[in-house]
Structure formats: structure tokens, C-alpha cells
Length: 367
Image 1 (spheres, rainbow, N blue to C red):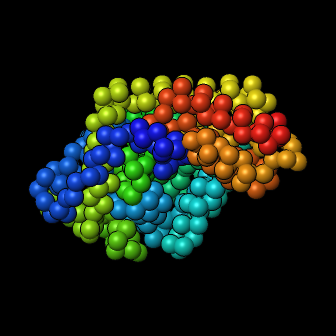
Image 2: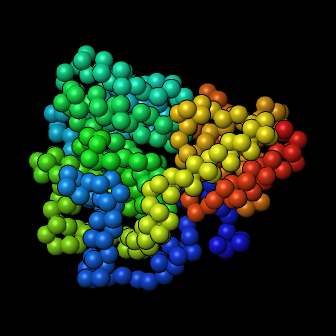
């Protein structure tokens, strides 16, 4: 890794390997056979991660992860459907806003930012409102790092005969989701998260049955996943100009993912990063916002030091000068900052980040 490049301790964009960056040094023709084969390979490898080859399509989409979330909601929820959005952070709120902008009927169930939604909550809500057709869940809420109980919620949704849409943006590739065991209509993720690619491409795993029946649902041409899939299946090509360099980087990142040992190895490294971070920050006297039992090894929210000398911008710049990029807090009621555990970094890198954070706070006289 270039020693002058900072390590991004954020939930994406994140630090990538030299091999992944090198893969973007070649230009590709968008209709070229080799590029189309690369796209097909990426889709196959992504489906294999969830064991979804028999049950789901993988539809890539240009843009950020939010583009893919909006495309999934807009394509798979019929115009007379109703979405129950489970909210305990900023990304649940964003999903609800997407439903509002699309003109879909929806309701929200909101818990505190450190409180996961439970299967019992969802069971009660579905019994109370028969009009709900879909439930939308943020698996790992990136605004805090909280992990919501996907398996329990999926079981309840299936029991009621409803359909589950999972925003797995921050968890896919590191936390196990098996399409053979967890029933869902759609799962949404992106290139620049736990797969350690670069930003610029989202993708949706859509139930084959649901997507085949989704023609005409979308209010958007560019975000119509049914149209995107049909065209790609027929021609092997993207409908509109693809993010060629992003696809190439993701293809290379997936090769490294397999070499590392796939999901179990990626999860193990991230968990070691998270454990190193939590232990080191505790020794500095900094408290995490989320209890350990529901803390995903993706990003950790910390309470800011209780010191009049602390200011996030000053703290951020001091840590950046030592080679690490942190993330501001997303909470409105409590002053926090966030540290990501994902990307091309190991526990030694995390310990170096803890050391940099401690030194920055001591220099500020904020510890």
C-alpha cells in the first residue's frame, strides 16, 4: 500500500488493495465481449456468496448503494403495495423517504438507535395491518453499527406470507446470509463495502419469481431492474454506459476475496479488527454506543470525550495527519464519532489507528 495514502476507517469508500486499484488502470469497451464476460463472472460470484443461484437473479446497477435500494423498492413493490419500514437509524429513515418519493404506501416502526427491531415487533405489526405487502429491513444500520436480527425477522415475515427486502449494504460479504435458509424477495448491496471494491455499482439479488412479475412496476427507466435484467439476459450487455472500471475493480476484489477464504475469512478479519478497536478504545476510556451483543464488526460508534477541549473537526484533522480517516457521528442527540472495521486493513492497522486516536486526544488535552 502507498505509505502516503491514508487508511480509510469508514464504511465505504474504504481502503482497497494495490491489486484492486491496479485493475482500474485498463480501459474497457462497454460492448466488448471480454468486458461482458467480466460482468457475467461478477454476477455469478456474487450469487455464489448467498447460495442464490437457483432462487435469485443478480442485477447490477450503476450508481451508489442508495441507487440500488431505490431501484429495488421501485421495481419490486407493486404500485398498490404497502411497505413496512423498520427504522433504527439514518438509513432506515432514508428507505422510508424513498417510499415517500416514489408515492408508495408505507408505514414505519422506529426504535431507539441502540435498540434492534425484534421478530415479535414485526409479528405484531403484521397482525395489525393486513395491507402490508413488504417489510424493509436494514441488516446492519451503518449510522451506529447496530445489527438487526435478520433471521428472526425473515421467519416472521414468511410466516405471514409477506415479502422481505433487505438492505445489506454494510453486511454483505462479511456476515452470512444464505438464500437457501433465509427467505427474502430482495437483498441489496454495493461494490465499495465488505467486498473491498470501489464505489460506483450497486446490485440487487431479486427473487426470480418476483422479478419476472415486476414488469411495469417501476416509475423510472434508468432504475427499472426488470428492464435491466431482461436486457442483460438477452444481450449480455448493460442497457446504459456501465461503470467499467468499477466492474473491473470488483472482479479483481472478488478474486482476492476467494483467495482470502471467502466469507468466513473476511468475517474473521473484520471481527479481529473490531475486537482490537473496542479493547484499545476502552483502554483510552472511550465508550462504544452499541452494546457488544448487537455490535456488528463493520463500524463502531463511540461517545465523544467529555472534555471542553474536544472538537470533532480538530480531532479528525489530527488523526488524519497520522494516516487515518475517521467518520463523523450520525446521531442527533449524542455527540459521537465512528470508526470502521472494514477494508484492506488488519488488526495491526487497527491498533495503529487506536494509537493515533489516543495521541491525538492527548495532544488536544481531551482525555
